[in-house]
Image (cartoon, rainbow, N blue to C red; front, side, top):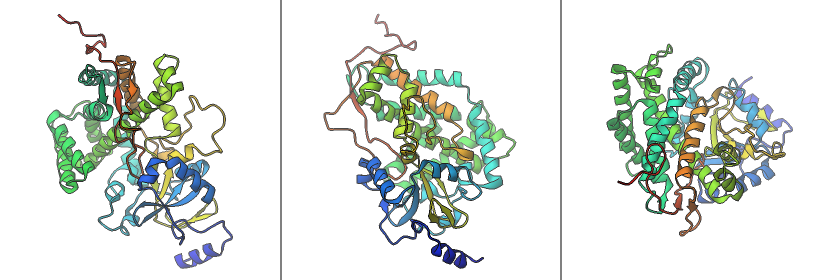
Length: 425
């Protein structure tokens, strides 16, 4: 059957509605300030109007289907044969200046591949992540956190993203990758230029050079780190493939981890139940982390796949080679699974599910929990600073991220490495 015949037959089927992408009706933009300010209202409206699959716009004139039904998401994520993650057919149809193309375009790594390539890349990245010593990582987080806290604990106020969480996440990732300070500074400079958008092309160039410098260094001087394990794995990744996987570790290890920590701190600082329970020792910060991952995950919409051919899901024809985006935030809040007390419930989709599930969950939990515990132990009376209003959310279709997290607290003496107040002479 030809594609035109398939589409003709599809159009004659008595389904609820046609493809969200092919629809002439309006799409819900995920790139606006209004969506960023209250995405859950948007998800509720989508669910009311469209059911489990909604027509959205990831960027101006970039259509996609957003999966907002939990069970539809499970079906898609567990069927990589019909829903591969390789975007190459799609990206041929996207203008080169598309603002989200750099984030979604194909790269030689597991999260953008299918078939044998996926298996090869997945085995290498999983082995490298599993080689990280969790006990040593706990000490690394503590040794990075305490000097950062000491840098502002006597001031009585701080902006936690720039002064604590971002530098902590960045240094932890550098340590896991075996990245020395000079190359780490190159990575930071390139990343900053990309995020600020002032000179993104130059930033991308700096970042690419820094990553290749790290890969070259580790070929000559291997160590007990993720980069070296990637290079030594039987999958025999070349330098370009290793550099892309290192880049992904930087991206997820900083951006996702930062937003997970910050959003959980916001929950603790604004929700009396979690705030009192975590600070009082009646609840662990791990439970607060899971509440954020379930209710308002830092990676709200991603896990993108591209159907090989038109396919019918929940009465909707999804076209071939067009992005199908899983909304972890919306699916986690699907009424069909929101029953009873969710404390300790980890059936959420924040880590993904199926073959593309995040292989670094244990690392992410440990880093986030230790970072939060170190801060709350040092500054137990920390409060959200709302002098300039409530915290604002960054625009973007994929993340759930604050622009800043200002706090106040009683000034306190610096800590020593044992987390005890430093003794004055």
